[in-house]
Length: 210
Image 1: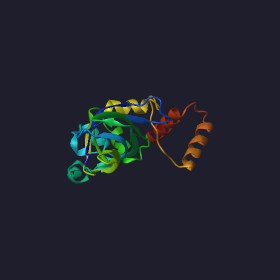
Image 2: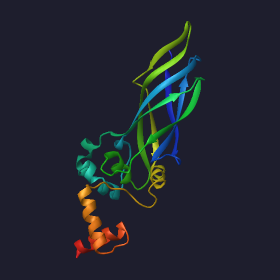
Image 3: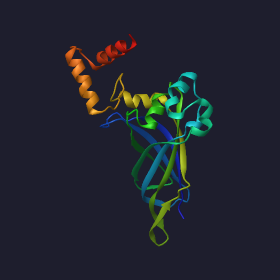
Image 4: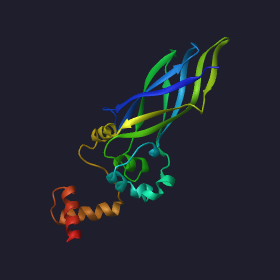
């Protein structure tokens, strides 16, 4: 039986994607020496927030997500980042393939809120694999399954995540609001001849403070 082993060896922002996307370098090893004709691979990518330390500022920003720090022993659960599929080309022994991971800057998504709340350091990723492989057997092409036990870890630099977002939202962020809210904000901006959305929010915050 052919068994595949997976290692994530690198990560970077994908500069030519239509939306924010992360590119992971996935190394795949097959130890028996059999030729692998193809692999239809499915990868779940999760964030494991328990595997890093948090500064006081990060702890405060993540309070909406995990609650009071005294409860973090119970609330720091895995966060789903993405599920992607990739076809591996033929190889023998070892190959490395790029895996494109689409991301969002919607701060209502738990994984995005987590990444946005970090100042620096790394984001602990856990990659879980499944799929179907086609390999050379004694009687021709054989079909096998990628074991559900196979997984890999990767410590994604926060700087790489920010670079992904800066490719599409340089120096800015993204929030989701109801259409009625946008219409009301647009009417306020128009009535006061405010040149930008940033100035509109700044003026409203100043009025609320006063």
